[in-house]
Length: 403
Image (cartoon, rainbow, N blue to C red; front, top):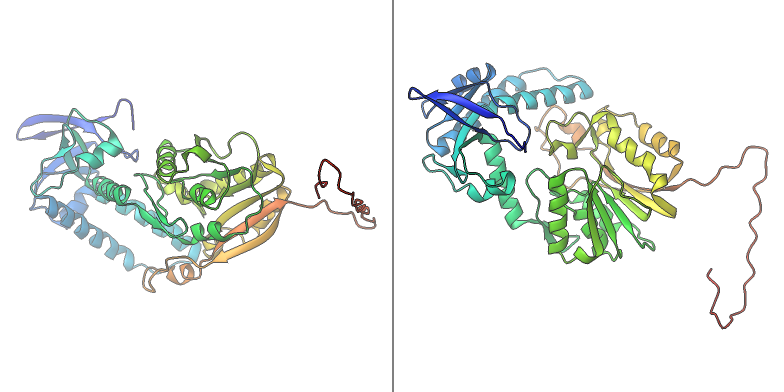
């Protein structure tokens, strides 16, 4: 949220109007606003939106939602007629289409009065949901209807929570924080072999779900980090609700906290690409920078025999967005070795007619890479030094020696 948010202005009934522009996604306000009502067709709405006009809705609330759905169908029909491209090119084309779709649908606007009151006919009470995301409001504000619908959905998820079988409990996501609706990566962290661990790091914690799983498995202390303030607040709230507040610390950091840990866990954004919103930052990694920084930083944050659990999807390799040897090479370059690779099928599968890439998406595998420090290699032509077997000491008054 901006400290001094921008404003939007328009004319209505011959009177100049002005209100705050409200967004949690850094969406730019429209430069021109037209007041519209129930008679607006989807064709006209798409044409006006394509020209950069914001459409301030004054009709019935359910009709506004119906207009969004009709616009989406019209936009998607044009994309469905295109000839498929090779996987990587098709992926980028679909991302451009989704961005175009979001821009047009984001042109339908609504006005909230003081206290986040939505004054449309048959409108729901949105005050509590908006207060969670935008804070208190004493003046009128305008925002995209599509964003408001997302805020309402996030409020319901935050209220009811998402069941996590590995915890036997629920995680309550906040708006703008990647929700753990996929159980595959959580299950891998819940089932991976866990040795003696005094302290663990959870990098990019989001809702705090993986930190909670580690604590549930008996790890004495977990330090969780995230770069987004909303994620830090969300993780703290979830860990406190689950009774783990005394064994967990949540910090706002870009990747690692200070110090070293016996176990470092990370489920980074797995798709190469530029995120278009804070929520997309949990999926798309610009030029693979986050993944590379995490792997390269591990040696400075692992204890001597420490281990890292890197949870990633192989979808980038399937789509031709990343070379299959890139991640193993990155691991080796950091002086690490793969101790084990645990895999699981994704918890959700796309429908066969989902899109042109559905066949490849259906082959996706989620993997947990167990990484540790690489053993020193022995140069060719030399003999490895013999390891002396320590003599077994007899017990003394101090107890048995550590083996």
